[in-house]
Length: 71
Ligand code: FES
Image 1: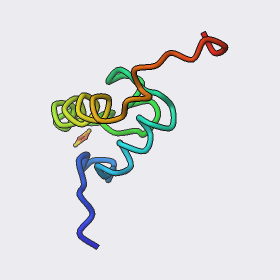
Image 2 (image 1 turned 180 degrees about the vertical axis):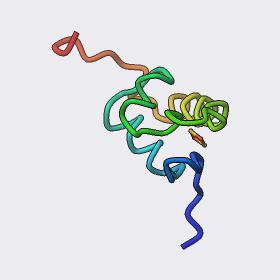
Image 3 (image 1 turned 90 degrees about the horizontal axis):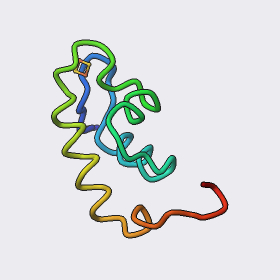
Protein backbone atom coordinates (compact mmCIF):
# COMPACT_ATOMS: atom_id res chain seq x y z
CA UNK A 1 0.00 0.00 0.00
CA UNK A 2 2.98 2.29 0.53
CA UNK A 3 1.37 3.95 3.53
CA UNK A 4 3.54 6.74 4.83
CA UNK A 5 3.85 5.64 8.45
CA UNK A 6 5.02 8.39 10.78
CA UNK A 7 4.59 6.59 14.10
CA UNK A 8 5.99 3.07 13.82
CA UNK A 9 5.01 2.07 17.36
CA UNK A 10 1.33 2.73 16.76
CA UNK A 11 1.29 2.44 12.95
CA UNK A 12 -0.12 5.93 12.35
CA UNK A 13 0.27 7.37 8.86
CA UNK A 14 0.88 10.92 7.74
CA UNK A 15 -2.59 11.13 6.21
CA UNK A 16 -4.23 9.93 9.45
CA UNK A 17 -2.43 12.72 11.29
CA UNK A 18 -3.44 15.33 8.69
CA UNK A 19 -7.09 14.23 8.79
CA UNK A 20 -7.16 14.37 12.60
CA UNK A 21 -5.58 17.84 12.63
CA UNK A 22 -8.21 19.19 10.24
CA UNK A 23 -11.19 17.31 11.68
CA UNK A 24 -10.53 18.29 15.30
CA UNK A 25 -8.84 21.68 14.64
CA UNK A 26 -5.80 20.41 16.52
CA UNK A 27 -3.17 23.02 17.23
CA UNK A 28 -0.66 21.30 19.49
CA UNK A 29 1.28 18.08 19.76
CA UNK A 30 -0.40 16.72 22.88
CA UNK A 31 -3.86 17.03 21.34
CA UNK A 32 -2.61 15.30 18.21
CA UNK A 33 -1.14 12.49 20.28
CA UNK A 34 -4.38 12.07 22.26
CA UNK A 35 -6.53 12.08 19.11
CA UNK A 36 -4.46 9.59 17.12
CA UNK A 37 -2.32 7.66 19.61
CA UNK A 38 0.79 8.67 17.67
CA UNK A 39 3.78 9.65 19.78
CA UNK A 40 2.43 7.94 22.87
CA UNK A 41 5.02 5.14 23.06
CA UNK A 42 8.75 5.72 22.35
CA UNK A 43 8.22 9.35 21.31
CA UNK A 44 10.72 9.21 18.41
CA UNK A 45 8.06 10.32 15.93
CA UNK A 46 7.15 13.48 17.81
CA UNK A 47 9.53 15.66 15.77
CA UNK A 48 7.90 14.45 12.54
CA UNK A 49 4.46 14.92 14.08
CA UNK A 50 5.32 18.51 14.92
CA UNK A 51 6.42 19.19 11.34
CA UNK A 52 3.20 17.67 9.96
CA UNK A 53 1.13 19.69 12.44
CA UNK A 54 2.89 22.93 11.46
CA UNK A 55 2.66 22.36 7.71
CA UNK A 56 -0.99 21.25 7.89
CA UNK A 57 -1.94 24.33 9.90
CA UNK A 58 -0.16 26.53 7.35
CA UNK A 59 -1.76 24.94 4.30
CA UNK A 60 -5.33 24.86 5.61
CA UNK A 61 -6.55 28.48 5.83
CA UNK A 62 -9.62 27.57 7.89
CA UNK A 63 -7.36 26.44 10.72
CA UNK A 64 -6.49 30.10 11.31
CA UNK A 65 -10.11 31.04 11.88
CA UNK A 66 -11.61 30.74 15.33
CA UNK A 67 -15.26 29.83 15.25
CA UNK A 68 -16.96 32.20 17.73
CA UNK A 69 -19.83 29.95 18.77
CA UNK A 70 -17.43 27.18 19.83
CA UNK A 71 -15.21 29.37 22.02
S1 FES B 1 7.35 5.87 16.70
FE1 FES B 1 5.72 7.01 17.48
S2 FES B 1 5.71 6.54 19.61
FE2 FES B 1 7.32 5.33 18.79
